Image: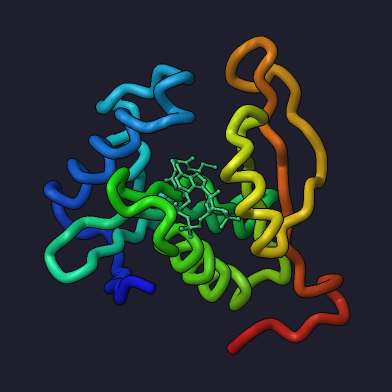
Length: 160
Ligand SMILES: CC(C)(COP(=O)(O)OP(=O)(O)OC[C@H]1O[C@@H](n2cnc3c(N)ncnc32)[C@H](O)[C@@H]1OP(=O)(O)O)[C@@H](O)C(=O)NCCC(=O)NCCS
């Protein structure tokens, strides 16, 4: 397992690394998410954005939306291309869960219907399909809403 330092996004260089990774990776290539779109997302003050480094090497990032109906939503997880398959994504999701389970017993995320490897990973990490948002970004391509839960709101003690 890589030894990651995960911290809040804090500089223009951090934002550049995230936007470059997102705009050159699937599934966002399919959705034609531009570098500028991605940069706007990672610098949106209403989101919590975390970057992961192994020493000086950028390994990936997370965008969390902790407001709104799905209060506890992993909006984006992306791992540097040359680090994929090495456990970084699983560590980023675990980090997001630590953060979200302090305020909600549910973590939500969406995965594109054609991103079968990522969906398989989320299932292995305990996420279950809630439903399909059909034709969400593009015709014929669904977003699958998934949830990992500690239990019902009224009977679950949130993590300290
Ligand atoms: C999906 C992603 C975040 C997973 O992170 P990761 O560090 O590669 O994942 P881990 O090493 O922790 O876990 C490996 C698992 O991820 C799956 N996986 C998904 N996409 C993968 C990819 N492009 N390369 C390698 N493994 C990938 C593997 O199938 C593997 O599952 P298994 O262990 O059951 O065989 C990462 O591959 C990535 O950034 N992909 C491109 C962007 C993306 O699809 N983001 C998710 C949007 S919902």
